[in-house]
Length: 261
Length: 365
Image 1 (spheres, each protein chain N blue to C red):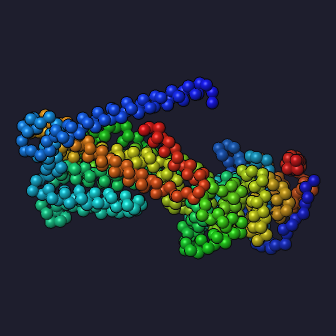
Image 2 (image 1 turned 30 degrees about the vertical axis):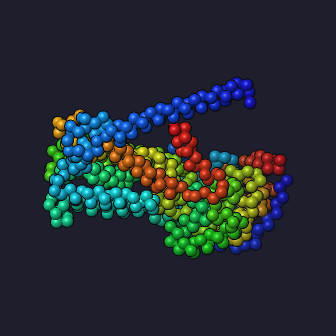
Image 3 (image 1 turned 45 degrees about the vertical axis):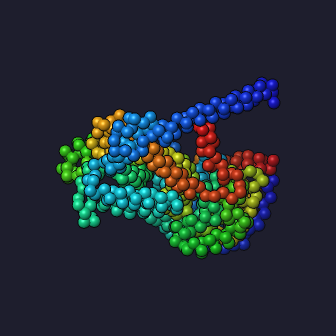
C-alpha cells in the first residue's frame, strides 16, 4: 500500500483565489466538462487525477482560458474570466502553466526563455529580468545551463526550465498539466522534487498528474475526475485510504497497482 | 564488405577517374573557345560595325558604342547623370545589410535609397526637370523596381499570410480570395489589367503613370506567392508554442513577433530567397507594356540595322548582368537567414537544423 505521510503540511491557506461555478465545456456535442464546481484557496495544493479523457487537462486549461468554457463562471483572484481579451491577458500573467510537452521556445536560450515574458509582457528591464531568471534557475537546480538551447537539454532539465520560465513571471497560481508524463522514468523525480520545493514555498498549485506519491506527499486535496465531472474531493489520507466512490476505488486500484510494480 | 559492394566500389573509383579527365578536357575546350571568342579575337570598342565583321570573335562594340541606350534606355540623354546617381545610391543601400544583416537595417536603408532614387528619376523633388515615369529606363530602373518590389512585397505577403491564419473569418476569407485570384492569373495579364483596365474603372487612377501600375502589379503578384511561403512557415510552428506564449500573458502581436515569426522565418527562409530572386527577373516583364527596363533597353542596341547581327553579344551582357543581380540578392538572402540561426555552442543537436541544405547543395553539384 502507498505510504501516506503528508510531509509538506505546515503552510498558510488564505482566501479563495479560484472559484469555478457550474463550468461547462463541450467540443461539438461531446461534453468535456459537465458542471464543475470548485473553489481553491490561496496557498492550497490540489492534485487532479482521473482516467484519460475525464476532462482534467481541459479543466486547468479553462483556468487560464487556453480553452474557453461555454457556461458557468470562473473567477480568478476576484476577476471573472469572461472579461474580454484584455482581462484575460492580465490574468494569464498571474497564472503560470507547465505543459506535458514542455513547449520551451526552441529559438531562444534557457535564459532568454526565462526573460522574454518578464521583459515583453511585464515591461521589466533586461538586467533585472536576467537577475531574477538566474536566481530562479538556481532554484530549479540548473543555473549552469542558462546559455544553452532547449534542444541541448534532457527532458527533465527542459521541464525544469519550463517551470522556471513560468516562475519568472512571479505568478500567483501555478498550473501543471501532466508535467512528468512525457519524461523518461529516471527524470521524473528531478522534476517532482522541484515541484515539492515549490509547494513548500507556499505557491497555489493545481497539478494534473498520475504520480500518486506526489499527491500523497504534497496535496491538500486530491480531486478525482471522471467523464467531465468531479467525482470525489478529499485530503490525501482519506482519498487513498477510504475512497467513497466506486469509480475512485476502481481507478486507484489500477493506478496504484501499476505504480507499485 | 560484400563482394558485390567491392566490385561497385572499384568500378566507381575507375569511372570517377575517367570522368574527371573527360570533365577536365571538356572544360579546357570550353574555356579555350570562350577566351578566343570573347577576349582574344573580340572587338571591344569601335563605332563601326564593319570592324566586327572583319574580326573572328565577339563584337562587344555593339554594347560599348551604344552604352547610353543599353544602360539608360529611353531616359533623356542629357539627364542620365540622375539615374546614374540613383543607381549608385540603390547599390549602396543594397550592400549595407550585406555588411550588417538585420531586417530593420535593410528596410530603413532601402527605404531611404528608394525615396532618393525616385526623386532623382522624377526630378521635381530636387527642383530638376520633370521626366515622366514611362520614360525612365535601363539598369537603374531595374534596380529601382527590384528593390521597391522586394521591400514592399514581403511585408504585404506576411500580412496576407497572417490574415489567412487569423481567427477572424472575414480577414481569412478576404486574404484567401485575394491570394487565390492573384495567383491564378499570369503576371503579364495582371500587368495589363493594372495599367490598362483598372484606370478605366477607377478614374482616380487614370492620371497615374503606367510604371506605377506595373510596379503595383509586380508587388501584388509576388506578395500572393510570398504569403503562401510564409503560411507554410507559420504552420511549422507547433500549437504548443502558442499555448506557452498565451499562458505567459503574451498578446497576439508580441506573440507573433517574438515567438511565432522567428521560428516561421527559419523554416521558410530558402523559399523566401527564391521569391526575392524571382522578383528581380519579373521586372523584365515591363517590356510587354512598352516600358524600358534593363532587358528592353539593351535590346534597343539592336534597333540600328548595322548592329542587328550582334544579338548574341547583347544577350550575353544582359544575362551576365541579371546573373550578378540575382546572385547578389541570393547572397544577401543567405546572410539574412543565417543571421537568424543562432551560433551553436558545441552540441551537434543544434547544428542539425542547417544540415539538410548543405546536403542538398552537395547532391546538386
